Length: 111
Length: 113
Image (cartoon, rainbow over all chains, first blue to last red; front, top):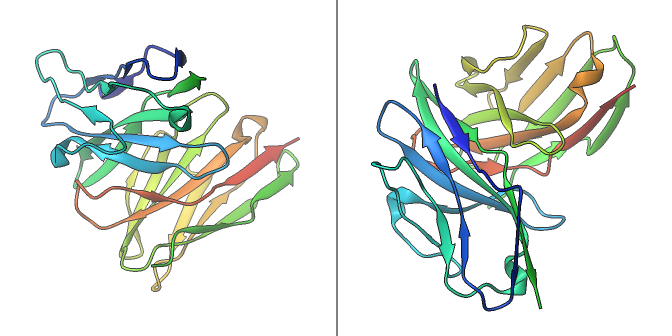
Protein backbone atom coordinates (compact mmCIF):
# COMPACT_ATOMS: atom_id res chain seq x y z
CA UNK A 1 0.00 0.00 0.00
CA UNK A 2 1.14 3.54 -0.72
CA UNK A 3 0.77 5.67 2.34
CA UNK A 4 2.24 8.69 4.12
CA UNK A 5 1.84 9.01 7.86
CA UNK A 6 2.38 12.15 9.89
CA UNK A 7 1.72 11.06 13.46
CA UNK A 8 1.43 14.52 15.02
CA UNK A 9 -1.46 16.82 14.22
CA UNK A 10 0.08 19.65 16.24
CA UNK A 11 3.61 20.41 17.30
CA UNK A 12 4.01 23.32 19.68
CA UNK A 13 7.47 24.72 20.49
CA UNK A 14 9.09 27.89 21.74
CA UNK A 15 11.19 30.15 19.57
CA UNK A 16 14.78 28.90 19.39
CA UNK A 17 13.89 25.29 20.21
CA UNK A 18 14.71 22.45 17.81
CA UNK A 19 11.93 21.13 15.64
CA UNK A 20 11.36 17.70 14.15
CA UNK A 21 8.22 16.96 12.15
CA UNK A 22 7.86 13.25 11.60
CA UNK A 23 6.95 11.56 8.34
CA UNK A 24 6.85 7.85 7.57
CA UNK A 25 5.95 6.34 4.25
CA UNK A 26 4.97 3.02 2.74
CA UNK A 27 5.97 2.44 -0.88
CA UNK A 28 7.33 -0.58 -2.71
CA UNK A 29 9.34 1.33 -5.31
CA UNK A 30 12.06 3.95 -5.15
CA UNK A 31 10.54 6.88 -3.22
CA UNK A 32 10.55 10.51 -4.24
CA UNK A 33 9.61 12.59 -1.20
CA UNK A 34 8.67 16.19 -0.67
CA UNK A 35 7.73 18.57 2.12
CA UNK A 36 5.07 21.15 1.31
CA UNK A 37 4.17 24.06 3.56
CA UNK A 38 1.12 26.26 3.85
CA UNK A 39 1.50 29.55 5.70
CA UNK A 40 -1.58 31.36 6.94
CA UNK A 41 -3.66 32.70 4.05
CA UNK A 42 -1.19 31.43 1.46
CA UNK A 43 -1.27 28.61 -1.04
CA UNK A 44 0.36 25.25 -0.56
CA UNK A 45 3.96 25.48 -1.73
CA UNK A 46 7.02 23.29 -1.98
CA UNK A 47 9.45 23.57 0.91
CA UNK A 48 12.00 20.99 -0.10
CA UNK A 49 12.47 17.67 -1.89
CA UNK A 50 14.79 14.86 -0.96
CA UNK A 51 16.39 14.66 -4.39
CA UNK A 52 17.79 18.17 -3.98
CA UNK A 53 19.46 17.49 -0.62
CA UNK A 54 19.21 21.18 0.17
CA UNK A 55 18.41 23.29 3.19
CA UNK A 56 15.52 25.72 2.78
CA UNK A 57 14.78 28.34 5.43
CA UNK A 58 17.02 26.33 7.75
CA UNK A 59 14.99 23.14 7.30
CA UNK A 60 16.52 19.85 6.22
CA UNK A 61 15.09 16.40 5.65
CA UNK A 62 16.94 13.13 5.19
CA UNK A 63 15.48 10.10 3.52
CA UNK A 64 16.01 6.99 5.65
CA UNK A 65 15.01 4.02 3.54
CA UNK A 66 15.66 1.56 6.35
CA UNK A 67 13.18 3.29 8.63
CA UNK A 68 11.02 4.50 5.69
CA UNK A 69 11.12 7.99 7.14
CA UNK A 70 11.61 11.52 5.85
CA UNK A 71 11.53 13.68 8.97
CA UNK A 72 11.79 17.46 8.66
CA UNK A 73 14.20 19.18 11.03
CA UNK A 74 15.28 22.64 12.01
CA UNK A 75 17.75 23.35 14.82
CA UNK A 76 16.25 26.67 15.95
CA UNK A 77 12.58 27.41 15.28
CA UNK A 78 11.42 30.91 14.38
CA UNK A 79 7.95 32.37 14.83
CA UNK A 80 7.61 32.73 11.06
CA UNK A 81 7.93 28.94 10.76
CA UNK A 82 4.41 28.60 12.17
CA UNK A 83 2.43 26.89 9.40
CA UNK A 84 0.88 23.64 8.23
CA UNK A 85 3.42 21.13 6.96
CA UNK A 86 2.60 18.23 4.64
CA UNK A 87 4.86 15.35 3.75
CA UNK A 88 4.19 13.92 0.28
CA UNK A 89 5.27 10.87 -1.69
CA UNK A 90 5.45 10.85 -5.47
CA UNK A 91 4.07 7.46 -6.46
CA UNK A 92 4.49 6.06 -9.96
CA UNK A 93 1.45 4.21 -11.24
CA UNK A 94 0.66 3.13 -14.76
CA UNK A 95 2.82 5.71 -16.47
CA UNK A 96 1.86 8.72 -14.41
CA UNK A 97 2.86 9.98 -11.02
CA UNK A 98 0.67 11.34 -8.25
CA UNK A 99 1.42 12.89 -4.92
CA UNK A 100 0.19 11.09 -1.83
CA UNK A 101 -0.03 13.48 1.09
CA UNK A 102 0.01 12.91 4.79
CA UNK A 103 -2.66 14.49 6.96
CA UNK A 104 -0.32 17.32 7.89
CA UNK A 105 1.24 18.68 11.07
CA UNK A 106 0.55 22.15 12.34
CA UNK A 107 3.69 23.74 13.73
CA UNK A 108 3.10 26.51 16.25
CA UNK A 109 6.18 28.46 17.35
CA UNK A 110 5.59 30.61 20.43
CA UNK A 111 7.64 33.67 21.40
CA UNK B 1 6.08 33.79 -14.39
CA UNK B 2 2.31 33.46 -14.07
CA UNK B 3 1.18 31.24 -11.21
CA UNK B 4 -1.73 28.83 -11.01
CA UNK B 5 -5.08 30.57 -10.73
CA UNK B 6 -8.41 29.00 -9.80
CA UNK B 7 -11.96 30.25 -10.01
CA UNK B 8 -14.24 30.74 -8.29
CA UNK B 9 -12.75 31.06 -4.81
CA UNK B 10 -15.94 30.01 -3.06
CA UNK B 11 -19.06 28.22 -4.20
CA UNK B 12 -22.24 27.03 -2.53
CA UNK B 13 -24.32 24.34 -4.22
CA UNK B 14 -27.27 22.16 -3.34
CA UNK B 15 -27.13 18.37 -3.18
CA UNK B 16 -27.80 16.87 -6.61
CA UNK B 17 -26.55 19.87 -8.56
CA UNK B 18 -23.57 19.98 -10.86
CA UNK B 19 -20.48 22.21 -10.54
CA UNK B 20 -17.56 23.26 -12.74
CA UNK B 21 -14.32 24.52 -11.28
CA UNK B 22 -11.65 26.16 -13.40
CA UNK B 23 -7.89 26.34 -13.33
CA UNK B 24 -5.26 28.14 -15.32
CA UNK B 25 -1.87 26.43 -15.23
CA UNK B 26 1.48 28.05 -14.64
CA UNK B 27 3.20 28.94 -17.90
CA UNK B 28 5.51 26.20 -19.16
CA UNK B 29 3.61 23.43 -17.38
CA UNK B 30 1.87 20.75 -19.46
CA UNK B 31 0.43 18.59 -16.69
CA UNK B 32 -2.44 19.47 -14.38
CA UNK B 33 -3.63 17.55 -11.35
CA UNK B 34 -6.69 18.04 -9.18
CA UNK B 35 -6.84 17.32 -5.47
CA UNK B 36 -9.65 17.31 -2.92
CA UNK B 37 -8.83 18.48 0.58
CA UNK B 38 -11.41 17.77 3.24
CA UNK B 39 -11.23 19.64 6.53
CA UNK B 40 -8.35 18.43 8.66
CA UNK B 41 -6.99 16.16 5.95
CA UNK B 42 -4.18 16.28 3.46
CA UNK B 43 -4.98 16.74 -0.24
CA UNK B 44 -6.26 13.60 -1.98
CA UNK B 45 -5.47 12.95 -5.65
CA UNK B 46 -8.52 13.05 -7.94
CA UNK B 47 -6.97 12.83 -11.41
CA UNK B 48 -4.27 14.14 -13.69
CA UNK B 49 -4.34 15.43 -17.25
CA UNK B 50 -1.53 15.51 -19.78
CA UNK B 51 -1.91 16.53 -23.41
CA UNK B 52 -5.65 16.95 -22.92
CA UNK B 53 -6.15 13.36 -21.78
CA UNK B 54 -6.74 11.90 -18.37
CA UNK B 55 -3.73 9.74 -17.61
CA UNK B 56 -4.32 8.87 -14.00
CA UNK B 57 -7.19 8.78 -11.52
CA UNK B 58 -7.45 8.34 -7.79
CA UNK B 59 -10.23 6.67 -5.85
CA UNK B 60 -13.03 8.97 -7.01
CA UNK B 61 -16.26 7.97 -8.79
CA UNK B 62 -16.97 8.76 -12.46
CA UNK B 63 -19.19 11.70 -11.53
CA UNK B 64 -15.87 13.51 -11.03
CA UNK B 65 -14.63 14.36 -14.52
CA UNK B 66 -12.29 16.85 -16.06
CA UNK B 67 -10.96 18.53 -19.14
CA UNK B 68 -7.64 19.99 -20.17
CA UNK B 69 -7.52 22.50 -23.00
CA UNK B 70 -4.76 23.19 -25.57
CA UNK B 71 -3.58 26.16 -23.54
CA UNK B 72 -3.22 23.78 -20.56
CA UNK B 73 -6.08 25.34 -18.61
CA UNK B 74 -8.36 22.81 -16.99
CA UNK B 75 -11.82 22.16 -15.57
CA UNK B 76 -13.07 19.86 -12.85
CA UNK B 77 -16.73 18.86 -13.14
CA UNK B 78 -18.68 17.16 -10.41
CA UNK B 79 -22.17 15.81 -11.11
CA UNK B 80 -24.88 14.81 -8.67
CA UNK B 81 -23.24 16.63 -5.77
CA UNK B 82 -23.28 14.97 -2.38
CA UNK B 83 -22.80 16.54 1.03
CA UNK B 84 -19.43 14.79 1.37
CA UNK B 85 -18.17 16.64 -1.71
CA UNK B 86 -17.86 19.74 0.47
CA UNK B 87 -14.12 20.43 0.49
CA UNK B 88 -11.33 22.60 -0.83
CA UNK B 89 -10.47 21.66 -4.42
CA UNK B 90 -6.90 22.30 -5.42
CA UNK B 91 -5.48 22.49 -8.89
CA UNK B 92 -1.76 21.95 -9.38
CA UNK B 93 0.37 22.23 -12.47
CA UNK B 94 3.75 20.73 -13.20
CA UNK B 95 5.95 19.33 -15.93
CA UNK B 96 5.83 15.68 -16.83
CA UNK B 97 8.83 14.63 -14.75
CA UNK B 98 8.31 12.75 -11.52
CA UNK B 99 10.64 14.93 -9.49
CA UNK B 100 8.93 18.07 -10.75
CA UNK B 101 7.22 19.80 -7.83
CA UNK B 102 3.57 20.73 -8.03
CA UNK B 103 2.59 24.39 -8.15
CA UNK B 104 -0.75 24.84 -6.46
CA UNK B 105 -3.52 27.35 -6.89
CA UNK B 106 -5.32 28.89 -3.93
CA UNK B 107 -8.18 26.45 -4.32
CA UNK B 108 -11.95 26.62 -4.61
CA UNK B 109 -13.94 26.11 -1.43
CA UNK B 110 -17.07 24.13 -2.33
CA UNK B 111 -19.92 23.85 0.14
CA UNK B 112 -22.78 21.45 -0.63
CA UNK B 113 -25.96 21.95 1.38
